[in-house]
Length: 192
Figure (cartoon, one colour):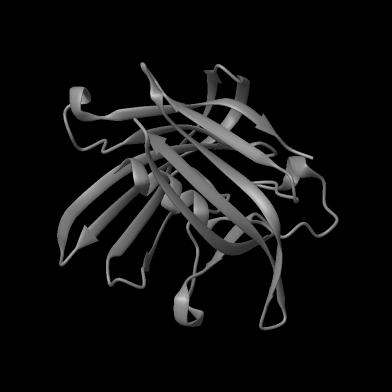
């Protein structure tokens, strides 16, 4: 499920529309990047990088490049999205628009159906202070993302996103025993 983290990260590129980065849930401009490392596994890491902009039917969006390396195996992809008033809009194939993350109160829940037919339920489970190698990030949103395929639990992941910074921590497959989970933490980033 490691790929699920960056898959969802790929979904949220944000349109900068003159507001400060502190008011953006996931601030992006060309050149920004986030590098996450799997705790205890230096051979497993990923980088999400904003590489440009694109016009999607009259909507200006950022283009994100995602690369995850797991012991030499490299996954690579792109996505288009934007943010308006701390709501992230992602553009899937066929013109489908989804909302993977948004600001809100603890307990706020929403869902969407991915292009592959899977149902995704997202809940804000907390607003927390978190420390990772890249620094201390007070007031980070803690999201639980649960995916269902054919009505059956497929995965459950937790994401911590700091407004003004972006992704800071991730737990893969939170429904599995702790020994089978991956924990990824922000080790390096640049936000312009």
